[in-house]
Image (cartoon, rainbow, N blue to C red; front, side, top):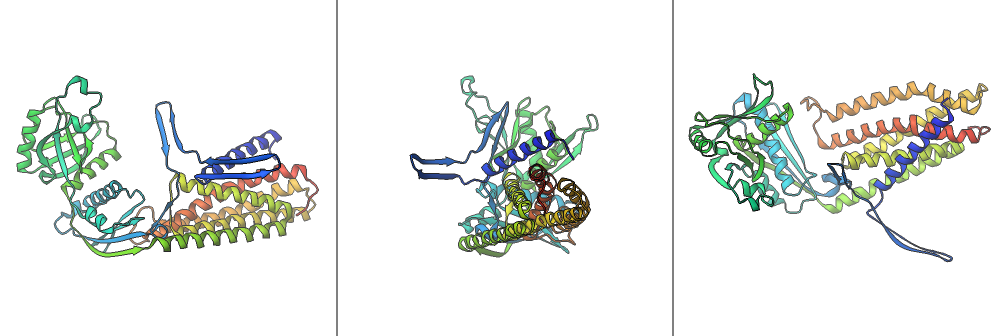
Length: 459
């Protein structure tokens, strides 16, 4: 049994978590208007935003819940990817470049919650693009199918007085004539002298000539690489390059170098895609799904809470408080990670609530067994938690393993790749993890506090 000071410290941690989660999940505006005798309140509370400066670090986070296609409405587009003109060894890189390119395009279109997936079955490659909340489907289709535009622009001299207000587009305003059609391939390599990752560029014959002219003209200056008018990198030209093969080096790690190569290849290796299926989900249907899902969740929580109180008395009520904290923490994680909620995701959350309640029932039944053996309530609760832990651990471990198989984090082709099923798996795994935390830390410490004050109660 922990000391009284440690239990009180844990209680304040639980209180802080509860307050933070409660504020994070409150509506954007909460009107307070009531009259209580001489006390009159007419005020509107506004949800605080996670937007503040911490030393040199700016922390800005959108905490709105994100909804998937089935809840927000929108469009689902299925493309067939033609890789016949790409060498077999470059197919994986080209598909990754295509996915990166499409994600960037839909983000520029304002669809930050879009889901882009590449799947392979036998020798066929498919690209699935889900666009929640979109209304102009035709414009999105046009945007997605457009070929990436890669350009190289040289640094220009600007007056000193204009330097402070100059943008990167002002600094790199001269077109070198070099573009994505001249780039054959971009790959990641390791510098043998420094052992640092570098990004290599290989141009075709025309591109090699243009690149030689550009490196000669901008020797000692920078040439910016733009993809769809978005600056990717601004390397400094250190020597004239006549053979059309260059290296971009800098403070790269393996991940950032691969990302840059993929971005460049998005312009150099555009894979032809053909729209083969288009479906739409109405926003009304999505809202109806949200309403019914929330109603089912609330009814389930109410029935479970009543059962716990009816069967275990005030200890069941304390467990219900732990269940409320569990729900608030889980929703907070959905906002902070963020998790894109789909209807199967809501089902996963409701199922994880059942698992959390099941843990409490195991603990209380084990506690009853200890009470029958003559233990006092505090000792019985501690022993109940300890004896129930093995069963809780085994059940939750099996569920988490099942969730990981459904989520398929390594994109194994022989397992599921459906976004809907993955949404269910994510919320289920998160719910199980939070359920273990609330059961072992939150509910256990709340019971320790209140059983000190009511040692004669039985369950």
